[in-house]
Length: 185
Image (cartoon, rainbow, N blue to C red):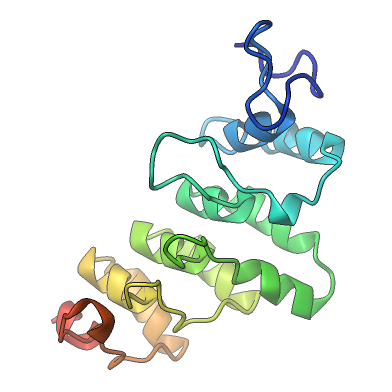
């Protein structure tokens, strides 16, 4: 597929099947892959005419990636450059905080949750500095501290604890009686 030939090509998020052109939305998400460069992402974002903060991946076949926002995908792919760029586009601290706390509709995970899950420490720090809610739980009750603990990301756990993460926020909604601290033990 050609990704950059005709930025506006395609209908909706899917693009034009007949020509093989990717829509600009798909190009934006593709430009967040780890091997891509920031300049390409910025060029595509500037060409996108919609509300980039509201853009979500509705076409991905991978359930984990479906509904990702640009910021969530950047956190998932350890793209600190893109995380910082997107957060920097919001000059108002309240708008920056809203962006940092965007959650997926299906499961409530936030960029901080994803970065904590993956152990992307620099992104965790950037999101916390932007006002990410440290104790915001997913729809099944998991918090960033819980998921970092469960995945044995010790440095991330330390940063979250130092930033004031609740150590006893139980996961009662799914029947677990484990707290974040018990998971870390």
